[in-house]
Amino acid sequence: MSERSFLIYGANGFTGRLLAERAKERGLRPILAGRNPDDVTLLGKELGLPVRIFGLDSAPALRAGLEGVSLVLHAAGPYSKTSRPMVDACLAGSVHYLDITGEYAVLEAVLARDAEAKSRGVVLLPAVGFDVVPTDCMAKTLANALPDAKRLELAFTGGMLPSPGTAKTAVEGLSLGAKVREDGALVTLSAPRTRKIPFRSGAQFGMSIPWGDLVTAYRSTNIPDITVYTVVPRAAARGARFLKYAAPLLSKPAVTEFLKRQVEKRATGPSADQRRTARMWIWGRVENAGGTAVEGHLGVPEGYELTVLSALASAERVLRGDVPPGATTPSLAFGPDFVTTLPGVEPFELVR
Image (cartoon, rainbow, N blue to C red; front, side, top):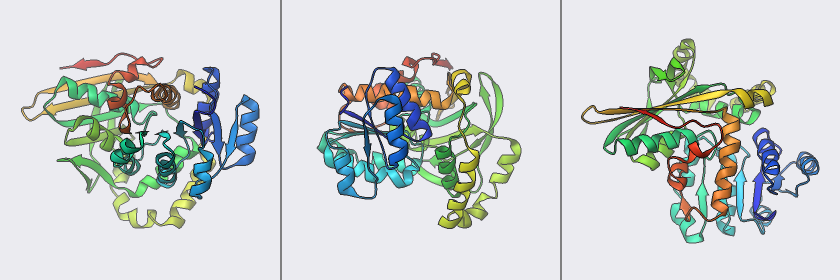
């Protein structure tokens, strides 16, 4: 990959910096880009990599910033604000677009542009990080094992301390409600679903969340009923039942901006040692109309570590021409075994 072919936008953020550092270690020379001239320039000097400074609020400046670039790895969130202008610019300039979002509404918007992407010869591949690579590959693996599955459940657990960007995105999601997919449609429940999740590392209490797999797993598998869980204390699950009453307040820009400032002060992301040693566990289950079920287990590195590994591997594969133009998901782009090709990922364990 030449230095003009691959650009990391948001390189000065927590995950963007990790991507830039690991890319340099792998012998790659991405262009580092963002809107903060001081931070991006300093990082470029530290790593000896080229930089470009541009924001997302001017379409001409954004298109100029992508001049000569073959692929953008978009690492600047919240993606509800940053994805659309970057995708527009990538389509206009015939530049491949990858990101690391887990926001289901953003995923819906990006995947809806499949026809545009094909007409421009562009790959639109969102969510090439922890959300949703391991869970999307799990969903597709289970669907292949039980092709007539009607119901899919996914869950994850493990150490993943949020970065400032991830924490701010989580604040935006507080007003979304208890989302699941039923009969192919996204619906809002009166309260989140809960269940005991039989992880290989031990059973834990889980609560449903409006995760990106509600969109990507549906695209990858066509399974009509999907619920995604994460592990939470039981008290948090009880408190979540009252979020619907606070949703109107939480959706007000002044309130969300205040909460973002508060969490940004406290969220630091995992340390280098935590990224190196922590593990996360993925569980999935599919069931058909007759009650036949298949469960799956998967162990992966810590979430930010997995994100760096999977995002860079995805960028390399797209630049090699391994993925045809269009808007797609990780498991459809690379196959359901993609996650198991990454360092530190264990093989799938299926239980019938």
